[in-house]
Image (cartoon, rainbow, N blue to C red; front, side, top):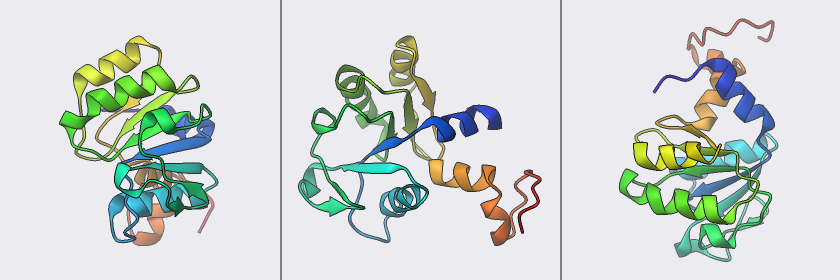
Length: 155
């Protein structure tokens, strides 16, 4: 899928509360460090993982299911296999009145679930990482030697 920088930047700018579905408490797992990065950038991050219910992660209690999330969640970031996506998206559509974005991590795509969300006016991003996109769009990857294509006066 191809997404414009403006589309991705607008999503990242308006999002306030992110539910990370499939979050791990293990700091070397990608779901952990993506959630941590987003929390450090000012997002309220709420983990969803039935194996870690009740644990505290970045100041928030880990929830067992989408149905246990507060209404304020406006983006769901999915760290699960593609075949697990449809029930996650269905639950998010049913239980999150402020949902505006369904984001599927790198390697995660599900066209039917995406179409169901888009039919309800929810924006969908597939096969991308919000941490990487945030860094790329804000020039942070340049420090690692990447040409981001973003011109800024930051060093």
